[in-house]
Length: 610
Image 1 (cartoon, helix red, strand yellow):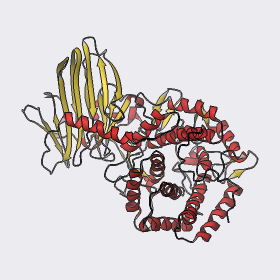
Image 2 (cartoon, rainbow, N blue to C red):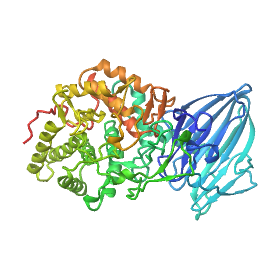
Image 3 (tube, rainbow, N blue to C red):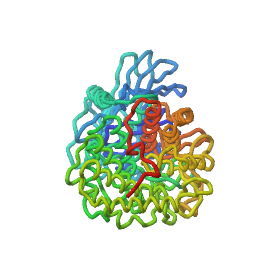
Image 4 (cartoon, one colour):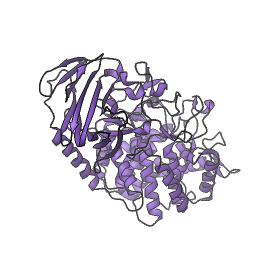
């Protein structure tokens, strides 16, 4: 069976990524993109669903691993009873094919290594046809339909739909292995230079990290999180995947298993704001062009999510070729949320594009026209109930967070006109903004408990309410915001971590039960810091950062009972929430870290809105 989720490390070429287990097995790899079908799918099944194991034969071997420098070149050191070896895993960045290299170097003594290669195309639905060449590279050519792989390395023998082999590494010896994907109708690509691939990959990542700026605590965690966000950003299109995986369960053995390998406007917008705050303007401009291309057309057709290239057709279906992580089924491909109405996403986009303006990225006629069209769409649908930030599959409701994000969309449009001289019906936007505030204050606030509510027809709270102060709707130290925080702590704090909301079938249309949501706890850290509760902020920040795995990766959720990560991994929303939380602490401690997403820090609930 697959390892614990936290036992996997990501390697990436910014087109796709592989998950490498502590046991030396690559158990998840989709080629050539994150949202392509898997060729190694053991993560959602067993070794017979595809894997590439490279590890000592010694069952008592002990491994330790780390990323080389500030890269996604993974170095694993194995210590056995007979010697020590080092395995370097990397995905070199190339323009026309997807490559993965695995180098074994003898450090001391001698170590017998084993290889177990099981290629399963199309989410383990197809065993490819494999031809073996008897050349010096022991080349294997695997083909099935549109996909082809070339594997080079030590000699492997065919054995019941797998290819296996052993070899002994002595001190100073190096054995290289490589995998190259290419479209099967094209010529076979040449062998990759492994030395050059590893060196240039590490140099590229280190050069990207060299421009990193952060003032304050948690710099290492922030940098690794930004690196994760860059790894999830497609090198050509600029689309930001929400995670590298599909169907890792939000509750072990449960059915809340979703495909996150697509671009959510919400997550991508927040990701770009986080990158912008740390000096990465090129990525912001790249994503903005992805956004303009993806949203081009009738504003009424705007979706909440798209494919990495801006694809709109993302039908959700269940597959049986993969049984699920430790049996948690179904395994889903695509995501039905693409067709949901979620009123908050236009606000998220408007906030990110306003942050870009504040950072000096110039508007074009096209980009501002698009924003005006999005606001025009809000004029038509702003009053409608929606599925909310959590993509509720129950009845549509007037979620308070969604209403506030609609307010934020108008607010950023107004500020674009007032602060940057952009054209638009400003007085109309002011009236819409004021009307929304009045509605939220009357219907989304419980005076009895002194808290904002999850939606207009309940007294329940929701962790997304923590974002009200982040976007400038209310000051973080406003008594009503502090009351909301207290209610969230009382209702949603679970063993030191925050749940998203109290799940019930009546609310979200799914069986009850899930684990605390990592990003929500970071949102609470940010709120603590913004409201001057620095000690509380540090205490919670250290606790939540402590659930990252040994190479700094965070998944979507965390099981406090088992001490295990849960949900898709690595999760963009978790990592960008970490960045925001650290930045809020830095500002609160006087380090002057750039502010993202919240606009003017002095904006308050009782601000005058004409």
